[in-house]
Length: 204
Image (cartoon, rainbow, N blue to C red; front, side):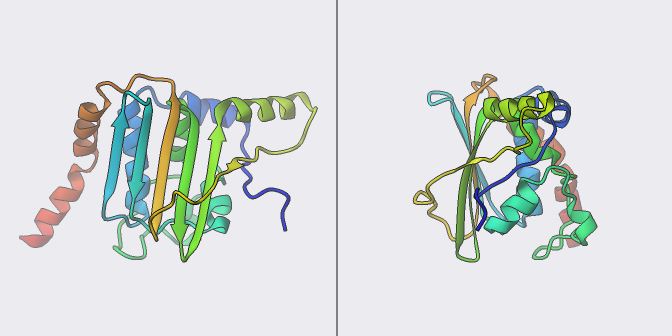
């Protein structure tokens, strides 16, 4: 048995350039999350923006992840599903949109805490990632005082009330979300417009 449930390996340079400094606004980041749900063959994605609580919650009904997949894919920065022959999704035969896990790193550009709850094949997994703690671990690696990778905090799975899919909760937000919902609709309409065109062409 491993000493830790979850392990992320990432360099400080990658975190800064492909995570913290890659995206400048909430809608851009959330559109990346929706793209990941699309790649997971999700048929429905729900996004709840709560300015009062200062949280954003994204839930999809995609294929979800097992504990092994969380570590080997979600927490494996740079994992490229196309290399594993997964350029097309298994259920809906969609061309994969995400590339090299950059979309998940973008979450750190708008939130200091990222919680992930996921279910697949009867296996439930839940974890929390903290930007300050990731920086602390990476700084120690850079100084040579530690070689230990970052280990996300395991969370209770009691709140997972779905059989398959993934829920992401963004907390301790760094950016305002008062107008995020309206801007997100515009962003998603622009990004996924090609899908509507494709369906229209195939049905005509």
